[in-house]
Amino acid sequence: MIALGERLAALLPPRALVFLQGDLGAGKTTLVKGIAKGLGAAMPEEVSSPTFTLIHEYGDPVRMYHIDLYRLDSPRQLATLGLDEIFEREAVVVVEWPEKFARWLPREHLTVKISAADTRTITVESTHESLTTD
Ligand SMILES: Nc1ncnc2c1ncn2[C@@H]1O[C@H](COP(=O)(O)OP(=O)(O)O)[C@@H](O)[C@H]1O
Ligand SMILES: [Mg+2]
Image 1 (cartoon, rainbow, N blue to C red):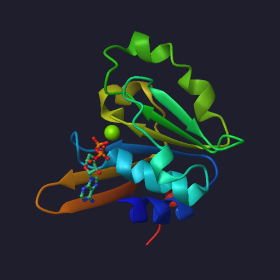
Image 2 (cartoon, rainbow, N blue to C red; image 1 turned 90 degrees about the vertical axis):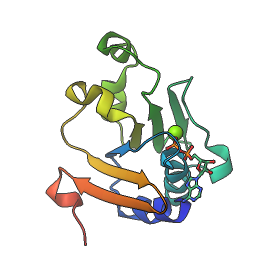
Image 3 (cartoon, rainbow, N blue to C red; image 1 turned 135 degrees about the horizontal axis):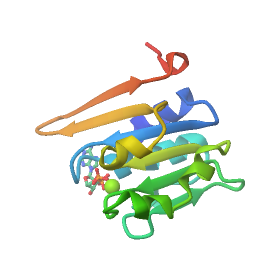
Image 4 (cartoon, protein in one colour; image 1 turned 45 degrees about the horizontal axis):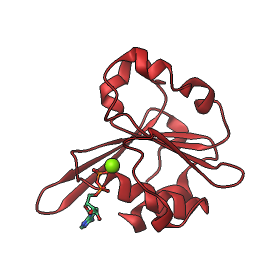
């Protein structure tokens, strides 16, 4: 997952929104460690789950935001996070559990779906033509 995150980071524009979907333990946060490494924003061991803090930022200047919506219950709580301002920044923004608030999040994004059974299957889909790559 870390190696894949690094490869993904190399394909991302400086401003990008990446949704990560997958069950608990699928490897979402581990993928973020690789993205942070690939962006040169942080080393994998410096990246921890923002489950309780909700938003972590990495790099100086900040090049990556890691957001976890798992513990949020309502759109009202979501609104207090100030995400709109973050989405406008020149940074890669990675969001875990975006499906909980799909209606309130930007339509243009890249989605990485991780399904972890015996082996992991990772699917990458983009709503941006410009981000689509073979
Ligand atoms: N490809 C993988 N192979 C084996 N273990 C993995 C892999 N990806 C993640 N893990 C492990 O699975 C656990 C949960 O991963 P995590 O990235 O926190 O999942 P999530 O954020 O989706 O809940 C961690 O202990 C992590 O080290
Ligand atoms: Mg996680």
